[in-house]
Image 1 (cartoon, rainbow, N blue to C red):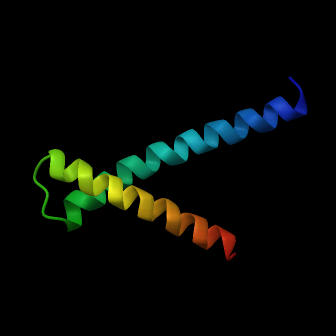
Image 2 (image 1 turned 180 degrees about the vertical axis):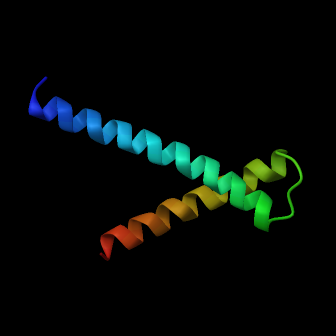
Image 3 (image 1 turned 120 degrees about the vertical axis):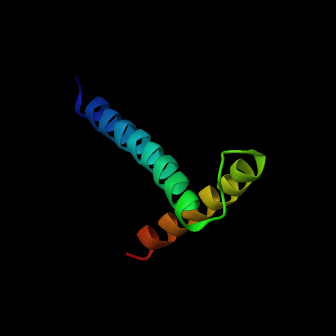
Length: 65
C-alpha cells in the first residue's frame, strides 16, 4: 500500500470514529442535561442543531490552536 493510501485510510478511519463518538456523546449529554425522555422528532431536530454547533466549535478550537 502506498504512503498516500495509508494516510488516506488513517484519516478516513479517524474521521469515521470521531463522527461515531460525537453521535454517541451528544446523545448521552442531551439525555443527561436536556429534558428528553425519548428519541422523538424534537430530539432529532435539536440533535441536528447541536451537531452543527459541535462541529463549528471543534473547527474553531482546532483553527485557533
